[in-house]
Length: 108
Image (cartoon, rainbow, N blue to C red; front, side, top):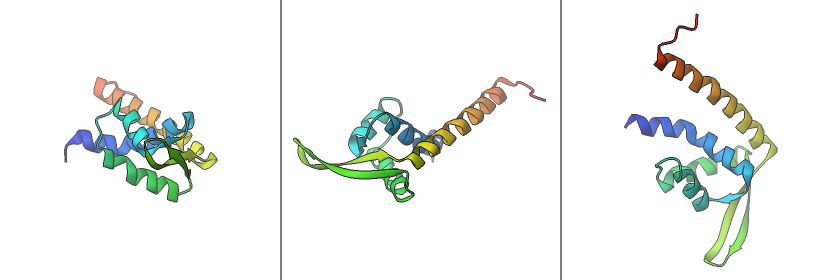
């Protein structure tokens, strides 16, 4: 497995939660939005959405579409917002630590 794929898998949950704070998304729309920033396969996001829904971070609802069957939308719950905040905080600490390490800074 290439390293970029491993990095993305770790960050996708944060991306999914963070984007849904702005508005509700259906799966394909969310994939396209994330794809604006990261090269991901469509099938990568759906298992994350299912797991996060099962864990109570999303509520889902169906909405009619003019372009086919009803779409399943994901609405972030208050628990999901808390999770997003926690993940963002952890991401900042993690990414700053990696940046420091790559720059060769001694933080002692």
